[in-house]
Amino acid sequence: MFQYFSYGFLFIFLAFLAYQDFLYRKIPNRLMLYGFIISLVLKIPVCNGILEIIAYPLIPFFLLLPVWFLHGIGAADIKLFCIISLYLNPEKLLICIFNSFILGAVFGILILICGRLGQSHHLIQKIIMKRSVPMAVCIFVATVYCMA
Image (cartoon, rainbow, N blue to C red; front, side, top):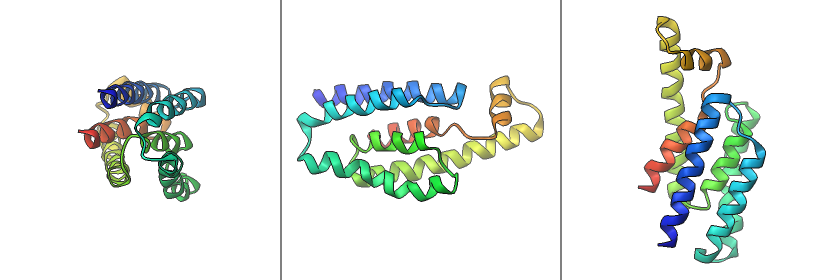
């Protein structure tokens, strides 16, 4: 029962961040901090040891840090994956990261196609003007897929 509550929190939190990222292309650090603290509190009763709480968030951090240095992903996206790592085991986390990058690539290609055709909704025009993919949307979809 408690696990469903924590998954429900993650779902609502990711949906809200995906909405924020889609509209404003910015995820506030304060929201990330609150989400991380709440996730830690939810993880403590069900964790298998303190090492799990410390080690799991380090996996996406060190894995995605080189991508961040190459400007391939934003720092907020790495922080988001660190929060997600508290809910998924390492194997599912890597699948989630891979799936979100695939979805991001597909999203980017669709944005380019819509931009070239000139037939785009005002939200897609906004995305084209910013020249970036809202990765939190892709991370949200990939995480929901991996949680199922």
